[in-house]
Image 1 (tube, rainbow, N blue to C red):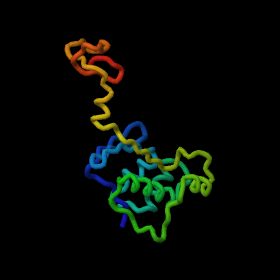
Image 2 (cartoon, helix red, strand yellow):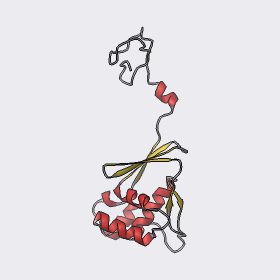
Image 3 (cartoon, one colour):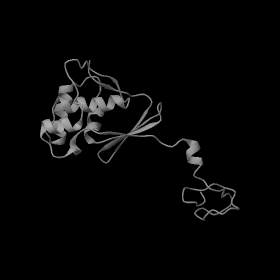
Image 4 (cartoon, rainbow, N blue to C red):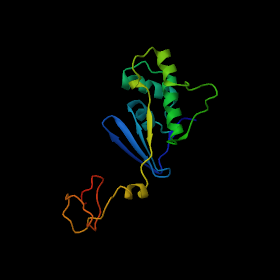
Length: 158
């Protein structure tokens, strides 16, 4: 079995070398650096781990091996962004990026796969930032106690 990314319930955007993914089912936003983004984009159910490692090595101009691909898959799996993973009984993802850096002799962790997960505020939390109502006030005017519309986080009419 070859790794396959989730295709349903995700909004995926590529931004300046990173991939930003919003999970509509779990209400989580994920930012994938270039290495993790490459692995995610090529998890099509056809690309093997060996091919993913070769792709990382070619695209990042770094000494990537299967462990890099496995680390990326592990991070993507923890974020619920992949549906199918290969049997890893013979292959074990490194326990940490530090371990992988030590083995590869790297100085910078910027080439290693990284998935950062953010939890956006709920509508109730967002509404709580409005300190007063500003209806009828010009846009951009500071909200006052007598306003009856809505305010942005800076207290200006919106």
